[in-house]
Length: 120
Image (cartoon, rainbow, N blue to C red):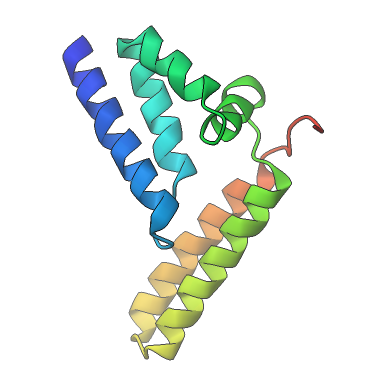
C-alpha cells in the first residue's frame, strides 16, 4: 500500500507543479493531496514538501490550521470568475453554464468559508 501512496503523491505533486505554469490548473489542491499521500508513504518527501520555500507555506497553513490565506482566496475567486466568464463568452449552452456555475459556487463557498490562518 505504501507504493500506491508514494506513486499517487508523485502524480499529484506533478500536477501541482504543472499548475504553477498553467493558469487553468490549480496548484494548491494538488499539493495538499500530494502531502496527504506522502504523509502515508514517505516522511522524507512529506517533510521536503512542507519545508519547500515556495510550495510549503500553503500546505503547512492547511495542515496546521485548516486555513487558506487571503491572497490565495482572492486568486481562487478571481480564477473562478475568469473561467466562468470565458465560458459565457464562448457561448456554452445554459445547461453547461448552470452546472459549471453551481460547481464554482460550491467551490467558492468552501474556499471562502475556511479561516485565513495566522497573520505573518
